[in-house]
Amino acid sequence: MMCGGIGEVKDANEEVHKICESVKPHAEKQAGKTFDVFTAKTYKTQLVSGTNYFIKVHVGGEDHVHLRVYKPLPCNGEIQLSKMQHSKSSDDEIEYF
Image 1 (tube, helix red, strand yellow):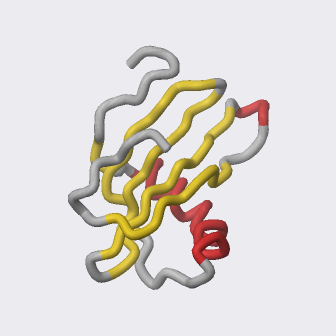
Image 2 (image 1 turned 60 degrees about the horizontal axis):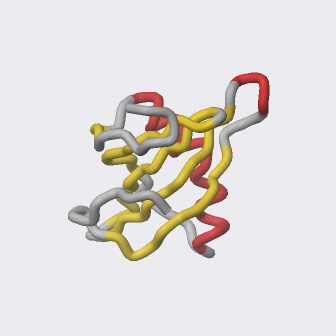
């Protein structure tokens, strides 16, 4: 992957699951509801001055959301939820947003 480009889709790993757990309260606040299920399924990354994670998250039933989470370099702060897309399905491709 080149700097600035979006990588290939990968299955969620332990690091991505931890990232999702850390931003879950922010996602719930943005959505205006709580999620009983919040499980990362797949993701893509983009190298910037840190890393953007584009993560497909199962939130119950057939519902999914896509998260864009920014993980800065260690010296530049903490992980933050940048954006969230609602009303996604398990078949929706993860794209830049």
